[in-house]
Every structure is written in structure tokens, then in C-alpha cells.
Length: 241
Image (tube, rainbow, N blue to C red; front, side):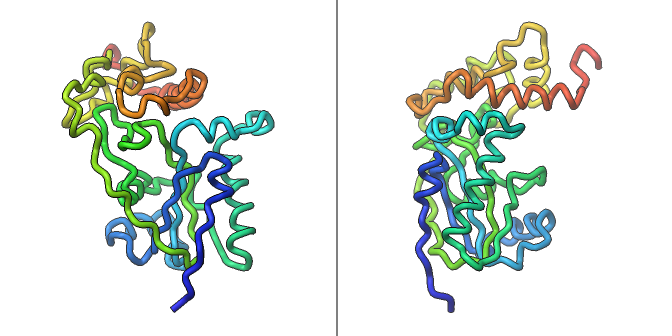
């Protein structure tokens, strides 16, 4: 049995990647292992999977002006930090960056196993600490022997929310407790007078973890990217059908 080593998150924390969870790959649920192996053929060559995320605004503050000159400032900077961390913490050990990538890694499933992720009426993950103001940033496969991270003991903040103000504030009427109407959301965001082209009024209106809410520029960055993706798909609107 390998000697368990200490996971040192200090470099990641300094860069605002303040959410980390170490999993033993062999202990992941069988269906998730099957899904991951379909996307990551080398999965079983590694012992552990490390999920990284950021909560709140610290990552944004840590990004340099130089980083913003890159085509993908957050992903490229995150990858650089991972390589630096792995050289320090995993000398002579093999590793692979599975995400950022264009592969469907199952980030939400991993986040749920970590205790970070609960579904919300506006389709963004939410928890009691960060509200919806957190994001998944990386998945690392590595031949490491770190202590496995215990799942956060938590529950969905939506369960105790009586107002469900997010549902009321959604101008597309896309939000509900039971499901999310993606078509309604996409059609509204693409409409001429949409108020959600560079934000999400339902998300902004959620009362959970308000102090961690992203600034306007940060919201515009993320929702600007998603808007470009929606436009690139060129999906038919209700008016076209």
C-alpha cells in the first residue's frame, strides 16, 4: 500500500482556485467511471482524480493583465498553474489534465460527490457557502497518493427558500422548482430586447451568498461567451418554427 502524502493547496489557493477535492478513481461510482473512461481512455492508468474549482471573486482578482491578453484567459492560466503545481507536488509522477477540454467530463456529477453542487431553478449549481458564485475549473488525473477529500456535509439552500424569487425574476419564465425550460431561456436571450444577454436576472436575484456575487464585468465575460455559443449554434427561435 502506498504511503499517503499531504495535498498542499497553497499555490491553488493563492490563485483563487480555492475549491479542491481528491478522489480515488477506483472508488468513484461505477456509472461515473464508465462515463469518464469513455471520454478519457487513459483513466485507469491513474490512481486519483483532482477536481478544482473557484468560489467567489478571488480567482478574478488573481488574474493578471497579461492573462487577459490570452484567447482563453481563465483556462490557459489555470492550466499553467496546474503544471507548476504538479512539478512541485508530483515530481517524477505522471499526470494528465482532463479538463479544461471540449469533452463532457461530468463536472456536475463530480461536484455533487464533493458536496459542492446542488441543482437550482435557474440551472446553475448552488451550495450554502458560495451560492451560485462558484465554477468548475479543472480535472487532473494523476498517479498520486493523497488523502482522499471527505465530502462536504451540506444540503441545498433552495430547500429552505420560501420565496423562490429566482423563478419570479426570470423574464423568460424558464425557471421552476422541477425543471428548467432551456428553449424558453435561449429564445429570450436571443430576443432583441433581452435583459439577459450578458447576465441572468434569476441568478443575480438569488439571495444565497450575496457577498460572493460576481461583479458586472465578470458576469459579462461569462455570459458573453455563452451568448456567442448560442448564436453560433443558430438554433431556430419560436418565431422561426
